[in-house]
Length: 545
Ligand code: ADP
Image (cartoon, rainbow, N blue to C red; front, side, top):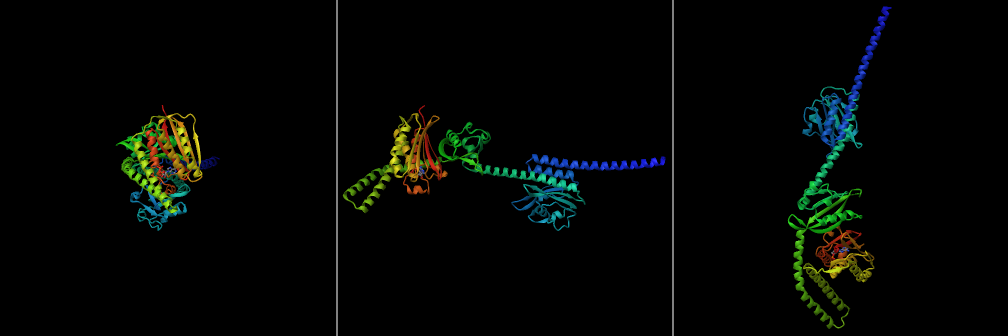
């Protein structure tokens, strides 16, 4: 009985021991699994928080070393531009292959096999392996390695490797952990690469903006300044660091620029605005030619506005000089021109009844004389306006506008054009010169009729807004390219290579006269136009306070 008992208790002890051993093994296994999961988790946390490529690479290497019992690990990424696989980070290797620049051309060796087949590859000793193309790597003395493809956005972007200098058999779990880490890191590395591309593109763009001589200022959809280049800093005497993020209206910018930005940002039709303005700059008075355009993304959504300004002070000085020379010539031409007109008239009378051919020759001569006379008159007008207009009358702009439209009705009817007038009631008075303001309006309307094709519509609008009376003449003619809009009000400027200009005669002085007249009244001129859609010429005059 005693013997039986002792045999039984022996057996029980054996069972208990086996169970304890099994339990221990299970506990160890569970612990290893937990360690592996923790390692994957910690990689996920670290790489998910960082957009820094180096940090992401290093945390992936640490994770591999933590969970797989090997001496070395490495990460290679595909360089799509050069079609190569480049070793970007390593740990535990005998030689520094990153510094040496380990690059494997597309399609070569074991690494590209892993990429092209999207397959985990495990090998033993690789010193004699013909699939290893890199001589130096063959000499490294690797006895076992596992290469796992890294994925992002549905494609392989590189390889995560675990390397052993001694013979080593990777367990199933180790290999699946390697693959799990490879995928975690793949997405994070892809994000980090995209981010670093964005940063380097932004730096590149900033360098371009800072190198250009044009003054560039951009505002976002909340009217905050988001770009202010070097030229803007030195011209306005403001530091980018102080203005970026501020509302443009709160910055010490020239008043016409602030007004232009306000107007451009209020435009529903998202057209560009071009204008010139005088302002104080680093070398005294400057003239800036400015265009403000909406910034649209690839999908056509508004992102903000950009103002580009060029310093055209020297062009203005040249312009002035040119006008002076031509004005002197105009003075000198007045008498001989009158003499020629008199002589041709006498000759015409002497012919009595000229035949059709002779009459045609006379008409060509008289037309040429009229054009020259008009040019001389305009040049002398400019001189007269510049020497100062008498601005002492109370003017009703609406009344003048109506009169101009009546006077132009015949010209418009000849081209079968529709004239529309929309004048606000109870417009405030302005100080001015009746005759010159009427000429300015007539010029806008005359141009609209001249450059708009047959059957078009010309609309004149006058209204009051914030201490100003505004007048606009809108047509549905050919429109004007943006690069020409800035120059329209320059003397002798005519839009180059425009079919309308080839057909229509002109001197390019009309708009220059309008600008001078309006400037003498303390106002401003502007144009909005979209090629193919028409143009709107306008001016704003201050009301009597
Ligand atoms: P001109 O008409 O004598 O050429 P302006 O100074 O009046 O001179 O106009 C300058 C240029 O502006 C014109 O040559 C023409 O190219 C362009 N322009 C003016 N008004 C319009 C308009 N309503 N539509 C299209 N182009 C215009």
